[in-house]
Image 1: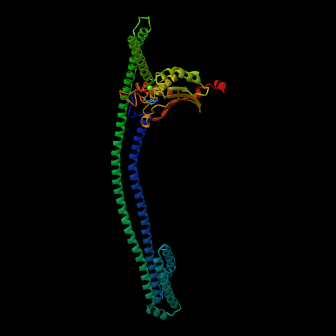
Image 2: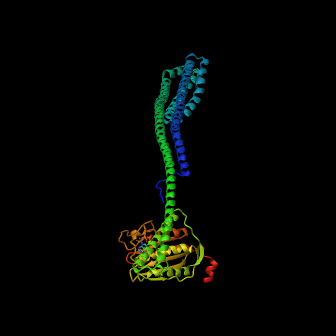
Image 3: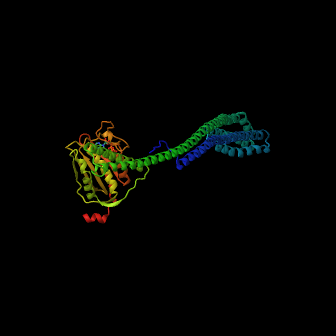
Length: 487
Ligand SMILES: Nc1ncnc2c1ncn2[C@@H]1O[C@H](COP(=O)(O)OP(=O)(O)OP(=O)(O)O)[C@@H](O)[C@H]1O
Ligand SMILES: [Mg+2]
C-alpha cells in the first residue's frame, strides 16, 4: 500500500497557525505602544522633577525675601533708636518698636524655612546673636534717652559699637543670601540637564519605537506570508495524497481481481491433471507420462498457494480479510496441526511434536490460525537439517493470553535481519540457488492475521541453534464457564 511521507495540516493545526498569526499581530501592535509608553513614563517623571525644582526655587526666594525683611526690621531699629536719641521725638520710637516685634517672628520663620540646610542654620545662629546684641545696644540707648542721659546715649552712638554690630548683621544676611543664590544656581543647572535628558529620552525612545515597529511589522508580514504558504502547500499535498490513495486503492483492487481470475484456469488444469493420473478415467499413462503429470500437479499446487498468498496480502491491505470467530479447543487444534503437517516431515525425517499440556478453550478463528501454523511450519521444515531436524509446537494460557510457538533447530536467523522478516517480499537469501522457495509473503500474512485477531507476533532466533516464532492471541475470548470445566 502507499505510504505518504509528508504531513497534512489538521483543522487543529490550521487553528494553531491562525492563533499564531493573531498573536503576532497583537505583539506587533503592542510593541510601539510599550515603547511610547516608556517614553511617556520617563517624561512624566522628568516633569514631576521640574515641579519639584520649581518648588525649591520658590522656597529659596522666600528665604531671600525673609532675609531682606530682617534687614529692613534691623534698619528700622537702628534708625528709630538713633533718631530718638538725636531728636528726642518719641514718634521715632514707632519704627524701633515695630522692628523689634517683627524681627523675632522673621527669625523664627527663616529658621523653619532653612531647617534642612545646616550651613544656613549656623548662619542664622550667628545672625540671631548679632541681632540680639544690636537690640540690646539700641534698647540701652533708648532707655538712657528716656531717663534724660542723652550724653551717654550719644557717647554710645559715637563708640560705633552699634554700627559694627549692624555691619555684622548685614554680613550674616549676605551669607544667608549667598548660600541661597548658590543653591539657586545648582538647581538651575540640574533642571537644565534634566530638561535636556527628557528631550533625549523622547527623541531616542521615539526612534527606537519606530525602528521596532518597522522591524516587527516586516518580520510579522514575512511570517504570516510563510504560514499562509505552508497552509496552501499543505492543502495541495492533501489533495495529491487523496488522489494517490485513490490510485493505490484501484491498483490493489485490480491486482486482487487478476489474482482471483488466475485461480480459475488453475483449478481446471489441476482437475485434468488429477483425471489423467487416475488410471482408467481418461486412459492409462506410462511411467514417464505419469511423472510428467505429477510435476504438473505439484506446480499447480504451488501456483495456487502463491496466488492464495498474494490474494490474502491484498485483502489485508484493503482490510477485506474475513474472520470467523468461534469457540474451539486449543489442545485438539494443536493435535490437528501435527496430523496435517506430519506428511511433509517425512522427506527430511524431521521429528515433529506438540508439547501442549493444558486444556484451553479459545474464541477466535481456528482456520486463520491454522493458516498461520501452516506458514510457520513450512518455513521451519525448510530450514531444519536433514535427519536431525526437530520442530515443536506449543500453546499455553498465560496472563490473559494464549501464547503459541513453533520452534525449530534449524539454521537460525541473524539478529540484524530479524526486524525485516515481517516486511512484504523479504527473504534473507533471495538468490536463485536458494533451497527455500517462496515469495516472502508467509510471515507478513501471519502478522496480519495475528494482529487482526488482537494479538502480537515476535521472533527469537540464534544462528546455528534454531528459531522460535511466538504469537499471542487474547484469551478474553475464552468462556469462563468452559474453562472451569477443565480445572
Ligand atoms: N524458521 C526459520 N528459520 C530460518 N529462516 C526463516 C525461518 N522462517 C522464515 N525464515 C526466513 O524468513 C524469510 C521470510 O519468510 P516468509 O515465510 O515470510 O517468506 P518465504 O517463506 O520466503 O515465502 P512464502 O512464505 O511467502 O512462501 C524466509 O525467506 C527465510 O529466509
Ligand atoms: Mg514462508
